[in-house]
Length: 211
Image (tube, rainbow, N blue to C red; front, side):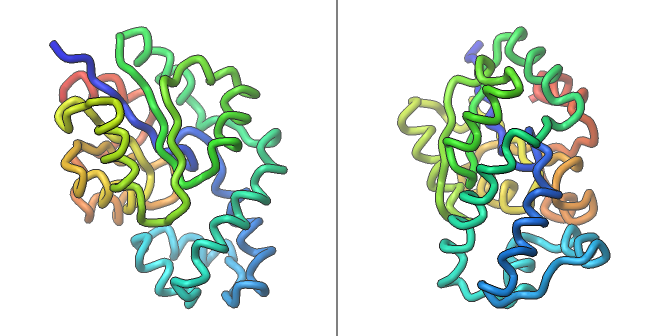
């Protein structure tokens, strides 16, 4: 039986970064021409797809790459304060113990991810980390990983907390597990029809074994 490779998103899936990212986004609001995010508005945004959020914000597509780059640079200073999602470390250890290969594909910087994993003693669990600079470029990165690692789509499962993770996985023809403990709400994730939808990291091993 072929060894399965489980690829994780980073922000909101492994690392609890939502509050930090909102704080950074609010500091950059004036520079990039969008309104600050209130707690009430955050609840509203969680029910929108990634594309709907960008449209709602009014930020031009031209500015998005510069905004992403700035957010990643500011997040670097907050890495020591960030914590893993409760229960994710235990789930990752169990997956590795069961013989699955683990990787990360993220729009965050590789430097930020490595620093976080090292601080939280998670770095030994992952075989690879790939970073992309675009909001909707994960399909390209996934396909590059498949090619470089000589993986077949049926050998790979993606785990993410946003609608764009589901979208990218479907385009790459790989199965996707959507998780509700990150940014997007259960409702909007379910509307995107992921292969699986889970509420707790402890559910990961059972779902992955069933694939």
